[in-house]
Length: 147
Image (cartoon, rainbow, N blue to C red; front, side, top):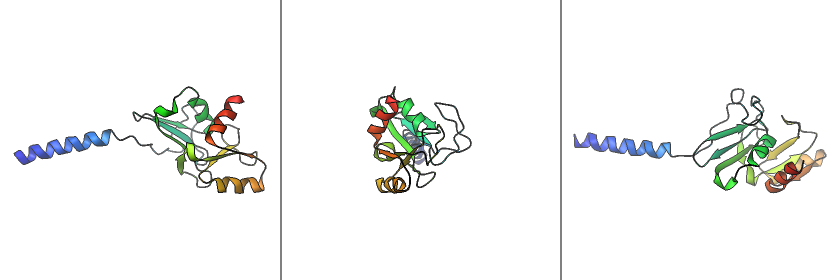
């Protein structure tokens, strides 16, 4: 009986640790909707999301919807801010480390022609073949706020 009690205690402790884990959920393309504009999220190359420190999930169909939503948030209170890696559709990468390109050669869901790249090298390669501008996360937010 003592062994069963220990097992139950261990099980409850383990479950409590799992429930405290804050991780981004996978975006279910074609099923999830943008928190900002309410459009269905279908584009694996332009999606974005953030997760609060309490684990609440917010998903977006485009990076510009995410940036506009974050204008009223303190990023320090967020556990994750992720954007889709244009070079590897479906892969989510940390927004603060990504390189961003605005180019009319790459259409995005909300029309800003904004894409994110995990590697700056990949962003620069795109700009070798197309007109556009490269941004860091902080400069991108300033650019979007100004427009």
